[in-house]
Amino acid sequence: MNDAILEVRHLSKSFGSNAVLKDIDFTVRPGDVTSVIGASGSGKSTLLRCINLLETPTNGEIFFHGEDIAGRKVKASVYRSKVGMVFQSFNLFNNMTVLENCMVGQTKVLKRDKETARKRALQYLEQVGMAPYINARPRQISGGQKQRVAIARALAMEPEILLFDEPTSALDPEMVGEVLSVMRDLAARGMTMLVVTHEMAFARDVSNHVVYMADGVICEEGAPKDLFENPKQARTKEFLARFMAK
Picture 1 (cartoon, rainbow, N blue to C red):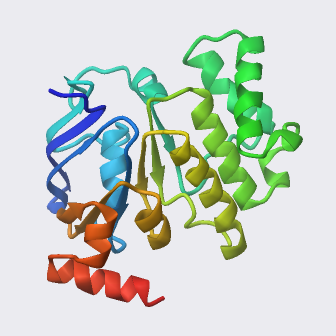
Picture 2: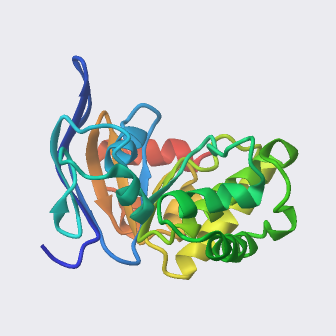
Protein backbone atom coordinates (compact mmCIF):
# COMPACT_ATOMS: atom_id res chain seq x y z
CA MET A 1 0.00 0.00 0.00
CA ASN A 2 1.03 3.63 -0.47
CA ASP A 3 -0.10 6.95 0.96
CA ALA A 4 -3.67 6.44 -0.27
CA ILE A 5 -6.51 7.22 2.12
CA LEU A 6 -8.94 5.11 0.13
CA GLU A 7 -8.40 2.36 -2.43
CA VAL A 8 -11.26 0.63 -4.19
CA ARG A 9 -10.30 -2.67 -5.82
CA HIS A 10 -12.47 -4.86 -8.07
CA LEU A 11 -15.62 -3.54 -6.39
CA SER A 12 -18.90 -5.04 -7.59
CA LYS A 13 -22.44 -4.61 -6.33
CA SER A 14 -25.54 -6.44 -7.51
CA PHE A 15 -29.14 -6.16 -6.41
CA GLY A 16 -30.52 -9.56 -7.32
CA SER A 17 -29.66 -10.12 -10.97
CA ASN A 18 -29.03 -6.41 -11.57
CA ALA A 19 -25.28 -5.67 -11.57
CA VAL A 20 -25.04 -1.98 -10.62
CA LEU A 21 -21.25 -1.84 -10.13
CA LYS A 22 -18.79 -3.99 -12.09
CA ASP A 23 -15.12 -4.28 -11.20
CA ILE A 24 -14.51 -0.70 -10.03
CA ASP A 25 -10.93 0.39 -9.27
CA PHE A 26 -9.68 3.80 -8.16
CA THR A 27 -7.58 5.52 -5.50
CA VAL A 28 -8.02 8.66 -3.39
CA ARG A 29 -4.95 10.32 -1.87
CA PRO A 30 -4.76 13.08 0.75
CA GLY A 31 -5.88 16.42 -0.67
CA ASP A 32 -7.49 14.91 -3.76
CA VAL A 33 -10.77 16.33 -5.01
CA THR A 34 -12.18 13.52 -7.13
CA SER A 35 -15.40 14.15 -9.05
CA VAL A 36 -17.45 11.19 -10.26
CA ILE A 37 -19.61 12.09 -13.26
CA GLY A 38 -21.99 10.14 -15.45
CA ALA A 39 -25.64 9.82 -16.41
CA SER A 40 -28.29 8.93 -13.84
CA GLY A 41 -28.32 5.19 -13.20
CA SER A 42 -24.61 4.70 -13.94
CA GLY A 43 -23.87 3.49 -10.39
CA LYS A 44 -22.30 6.65 -8.94
CA SER A 45 -24.42 6.90 -5.79
CA THR A 46 -24.24 3.16 -5.17
CA LEU A 47 -20.46 3.45 -5.28
CA LEU A 48 -20.53 6.10 -2.53
CA ARG A 49 -22.98 4.06 -0.49
CA CYS A 50 -20.65 1.05 -0.66
CA ILE A 51 -17.65 3.16 0.36
CA ASN A 52 -19.61 4.49 3.35
CA LEU A 53 -20.88 1.00 4.27
CA LEU A 54 -24.51 1.94 3.66
CA GLU A 55 -24.49 -0.92 1.14
CA THR A 56 -22.49 -4.13 1.40
CA PRO A 57 -20.37 -4.78 -1.71
CA THR A 58 -21.05 -8.06 -3.49
CA ASN A 59 -17.37 -8.51 -4.33
CA GLY A 60 -14.12 -6.57 -4.06
CA GLU A 61 -12.22 -4.63 -1.46
CA ILE A 62 -12.29 -1.13 0.00
CA PHE A 63 -9.05 -0.21 1.74
CA PHE A 64 -8.99 2.65 4.25
CA HIS A 65 -5.35 3.34 5.09
CA GLY A 66 -4.49 -0.16 3.87
CA GLU A 67 -7.15 -1.97 5.91
CA ASP A 68 -9.93 -3.72 4.02
CA ILE A 69 -13.17 -2.46 5.53
CA ALA A 70 -15.52 -4.24 3.08
CA GLY A 71 -17.12 -7.36 4.47
CA ARG A 72 -15.31 -7.12 7.78
CA LYS A 73 -16.74 -6.53 11.22
CA VAL A 74 -15.86 -2.84 11.09
CA LYS A 75 -17.77 -0.58 13.47
CA ALA A 76 -19.58 1.49 10.87
CA SER A 77 -20.21 4.54 13.08
CA VAL A 78 -16.51 4.91 13.93
CA TYR A 79 -15.47 4.41 10.29
CA ARG A 80 -18.09 6.94 9.12
CA SER A 81 -16.74 9.52 11.55
CA LYS A 82 -13.51 9.41 9.48
CA VAL A 83 -15.24 9.05 6.13
CA GLY A 84 -18.04 11.62 6.31
CA MET A 85 -20.95 11.82 3.91
CA VAL A 86 -23.15 14.65 2.69
CA PHE A 87 -26.42 13.45 1.15
CA GLN A 88 -28.51 15.06 -1.56
CA SER A 89 -31.53 15.12 0.77
CA PHE A 90 -29.64 16.70 3.73
CA ASN A 91 -30.72 14.04 6.31
CA LEU A 92 -30.91 16.58 9.14
CA PHE A 93 -32.82 15.78 12.32
CA ASN A 94 -35.99 17.89 12.11
CA ASN A 95 -36.58 17.85 15.87
CA MET A 96 -33.16 19.40 16.60
CA THR A 97 -31.79 22.90 16.10
CA VAL A 98 -29.01 23.61 13.61
CA LEU A 99 -26.51 23.62 16.48
CA GLU A 100 -27.82 20.36 17.96
CA ASN A 101 -27.62 18.70 14.54
CA CYS A 102 -23.91 19.54 14.46
CA MET A 103 -23.29 18.36 18.03
CA VAL A 104 -25.11 15.02 18.22
CA GLY A 105 -22.61 12.93 16.22
CA GLN A 106 -19.71 14.37 18.17
CA THR A 107 -21.22 13.50 21.56
CA LYS A 108 -22.65 10.10 20.57
CA VAL A 109 -19.85 8.72 18.36
CA LEU A 110 -16.72 10.65 19.31
CA LYS A 111 -17.79 10.90 22.99
CA ARG A 112 -16.86 14.57 23.13
CA ASP A 113 -18.21 16.55 26.06
CA LYS A 114 -20.99 18.99 25.21
CA GLU A 115 -18.88 22.12 25.54
CA THR A 116 -16.19 20.80 23.18
CA ALA A 117 -18.86 19.62 20.74
CA ARG A 118 -20.55 23.03 20.88
CA LYS A 119 -17.28 24.86 20.15
CA ARG A 120 -16.50 22.59 17.19
CA ALA A 121 -20.05 22.89 15.85
CA LEU A 122 -19.91 26.70 16.06
CA GLN A 123 -16.51 26.75 14.37
CA TYR A 124 -17.76 24.82 11.33
CA LEU A 125 -21.14 26.54 11.17
CA GLU A 126 -19.21 29.81 11.03
CA GLN A 127 -17.04 28.40 8.24
CA VAL A 128 -20.09 27.59 6.07
CA GLY A 129 -21.86 30.87 6.88
CA MET A 130 -24.58 29.36 9.09
CA ALA A 131 -23.59 30.71 12.54
CA PRO A 132 -26.54 33.19 12.61
CA TYR A 133 -28.98 30.27 12.37
CA ILE A 134 -27.84 28.04 15.23
CA ASN A 135 -31.22 28.09 16.99
CA ALA A 136 -33.28 27.50 13.86
CA ARG A 137 -34.80 24.14 13.03
CA PRO A 138 -34.44 22.61 9.56
CA ARG A 139 -38.01 23.54 8.52
CA GLN A 140 -37.18 27.22 9.10
CA ILE A 141 -34.25 27.41 6.67
CA SER A 142 -33.84 27.04 2.90
CA GLY A 143 -32.54 23.99 1.05
CA GLY A 144 -29.18 25.63 0.44
CA GLN A 145 -28.90 26.49 4.11
CA LYS A 146 -29.84 22.92 5.11
CA GLN A 147 -27.09 21.57 2.88
CA ARG A 148 -24.55 23.95 4.39
CA VAL A 149 -25.59 22.75 7.86
CA ALA A 150 -25.18 19.15 6.66
CA ILE A 151 -21.65 19.98 5.48
CA ALA A 152 -20.85 21.65 8.82
CA ARG A 153 -22.20 18.59 10.64
CA ALA A 154 -19.91 16.32 8.62
CA LEU A 155 -16.93 18.64 9.16
CA ALA A 156 -17.54 18.77 12.92
CA MET A 157 -16.60 15.07 13.06
CA GLU A 158 -13.24 16.14 11.55
CA PRO A 159 -13.19 13.37 8.95
CA GLU A 160 -10.21 12.52 6.77
CA ILE A 161 -12.34 12.45 3.65
CA LEU A 162 -15.78 13.80 2.75
CA LEU A 163 -18.11 12.01 0.35
CA PHE A 164 -20.72 14.15 -1.42
CA ASP A 165 -23.67 12.42 -3.10
CA GLU A 166 -25.03 14.93 -5.63
CA PRO A 167 -25.14 17.64 -2.95
CA THR A 168 -26.86 20.22 -5.17
CA SER A 169 -29.40 18.04 -7.01
CA ALA A 170 -32.25 18.68 -4.54
CA LEU A 171 -31.72 22.45 -4.54
CA ASP A 172 -33.43 25.25 -6.42
CA PRO A 173 -31.04 26.71 -9.02
CA GLU A 174 -30.42 29.93 -7.08
CA MET A 175 -29.24 27.91 -4.06
CA VAL A 176 -26.76 25.74 -5.93
CA GLY A 177 -24.11 28.45 -5.99
CA GLU A 178 -23.97 28.90 -2.22
CA VAL A 179 -23.31 25.20 -1.65
CA LEU A 180 -20.73 24.97 -4.45
CA SER A 181 -18.99 28.02 -2.96
CA VAL A 182 -18.61 26.19 0.37
CA MET A 183 -17.26 23.13 -1.45
CA ARG A 184 -14.77 25.23 -3.42
CA ASP A 185 -13.59 26.74 -0.14
CA LEU A 186 -13.13 23.26 1.37
CA ALA A 187 -11.10 22.19 -1.66
CA ALA A 188 -8.92 25.29 -1.33
CA ARG A 189 -8.32 24.40 2.33
CA GLY A 190 -7.02 20.97 1.28
CA MET A 191 -10.02 18.83 2.27
CA THR A 192 -9.96 15.40 0.64
CA MET A 193 -13.26 15.03 -1.23
CA LEU A 194 -15.01 12.44 -3.36
CA VAL A 195 -17.91 14.15 -5.12
CA VAL A 196 -20.68 12.59 -7.19
CA THR A 197 -21.98 15.53 -9.18
CA HIS A 198 -23.81 16.78 -12.26
CA GLU A 199 -22.08 20.15 -11.87
CA MET A 200 -19.63 19.91 -14.75
CA ALA A 201 -17.99 23.28 -14.07
CA PHE A 202 -17.15 22.15 -10.53
CA ALA A 203 -15.75 18.85 -11.81
CA ARG A 204 -13.68 20.65 -14.44
CA ASP A 205 -12.44 23.61 -12.37
CA VAL A 206 -12.13 22.35 -8.79
CA SER A 207 -11.24 18.64 -9.08
CA ASN A 208 -7.77 17.29 -9.65
CA HIS A 209 -9.17 13.94 -10.79
CA VAL A 210 -12.37 13.08 -12.68
CA VAL A 211 -13.96 9.65 -13.03
CA TYR A 212 -16.59 9.10 -15.75
CA MET A 213 -18.93 6.18 -15.10
CA ALA A 214 -21.47 4.50 -17.37
CA ASP A 215 -23.44 1.29 -16.86
CA GLY A 216 -21.65 0.43 -13.63
CA VAL A 217 -18.09 0.68 -14.93
CA ILE A 218 -15.44 3.38 -15.06
CA CYS A 219 -15.22 4.28 -18.75
CA GLU A 220 -12.49 6.85 -18.37
CA GLU A 221 -10.65 8.79 -15.68
CA GLY A 222 -7.89 11.32 -15.48
CA ALA A 223 -6.99 14.96 -14.92
CA PRO A 224 -9.92 17.32 -15.65
CA LYS A 225 -8.07 19.07 -18.48
CA ASP A 226 -7.42 15.76 -20.24
CA LEU A 227 -10.88 14.33 -19.71
CA PHE A 228 -12.83 17.47 -20.60
CA GLU A 229 -10.66 18.71 -23.47
CA ASN A 230 -9.43 15.45 -24.95
CA PRO A 231 -11.64 12.51 -23.93
CA LYS A 232 -10.46 9.23 -25.43
CA GLN A 233 -13.65 7.16 -25.27
CA ALA A 234 -16.59 7.78 -27.60
CA ARG A 235 -19.05 7.46 -24.70
CA THR A 236 -17.18 10.12 -22.71
CA LYS A 237 -17.20 12.48 -25.71
CA GLU A 238 -20.92 11.94 -26.22
CA PHE A 239 -21.75 12.49 -22.53
CA LEU A 240 -19.64 15.65 -22.24
CA ALA A 241 -20.99 17.08 -25.48
CA ARG A 242 -24.52 16.62 -24.15
CA PHE A 243 -23.76 18.12 -20.74
CA MET A 244 -21.46 20.95 -21.76
CA ALA A 245 -24.04 22.12 -24.32
CA LYS A 246 -26.54 22.87 -21.53
